[in-house]
Length: 232
Image 1 (cartoon, one colour):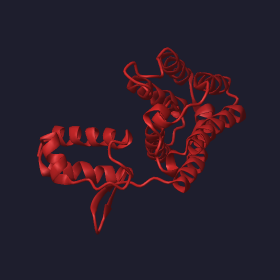
Image 2: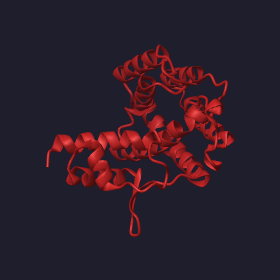
Image 3: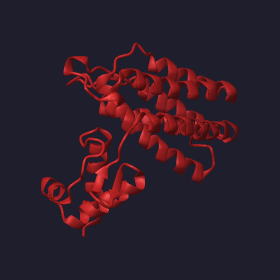
Image 4: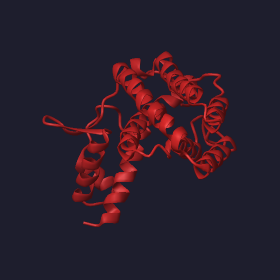
């Protein structure tokens, strides 16, 4: 079994799950995936096993592999624990970060702030913005010095990213996300840990409230005309 094929299969399925191309709870049929991606059954099984470890897939006795379910309670719990974990990472990074760390934050913010949020093709968040957004948040905590904290944080970021991407087409809000990012960056570079952590917590809490107010998790029944933009 080709390692590169398995990796490609994993990345493709991961992106599909994050973007909601598989509905929460939908059965992931190995043979159908194999045919559509033109890969081996072994590559699909290995990719699904890795995605189960990521928490994006569940392996159930009755149905086999399914896309992980989503819910209001899960998102609330995820957000609360994510805030606890990421705020502590940010505190440690502010204590330990050097000039190189500061430079990477500035660079990541500069690229993100110069990138359009919406895709040119439709009213969705652009792929480039999404990638730079992740890099910006990664840069803030990169100097925390705790590999285990970072691993746990990355796991929760991935789960939150799934909610954000799936909800984005359904929500419209006059949110100045660039101003939020800039304020977090400035407080971090000023080494003002209490302010930076408060701003980061508010950033995540705002995302939670936007998604909950959208009604997305209550039924996902918005029409195309109602589907607008959310960011987190």
